[in-house]
Length: 70
Image (tube, rainbow, N blue to C red):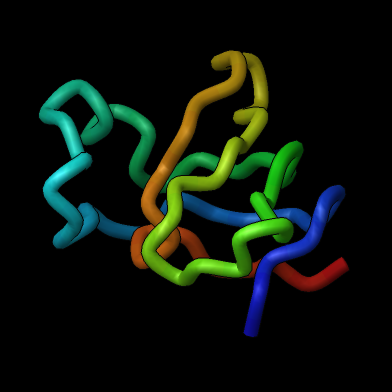
C-alpha cells in the first residue's frame, strides 16, 4: 500500500535499506505524518519525507514505517 501525504505513521523498526543511518535508531517508536510520499516516482524503494512529532522532518526508507489508524 503506498503512503499518502498527511497519513499518520510510526517508525516501528530499523530499516534493511542501505540509506539507514545509526542516528536514525533514536526515532524508532516515534509517530509522525507523511509530508512528501514521493508519489511522482511511486517507487517502493524511495525515501519518503516524514515530520516526526517534536523531532523535525526526516527522510526514511519505507520498510521501517507503518501506517497508524486515523
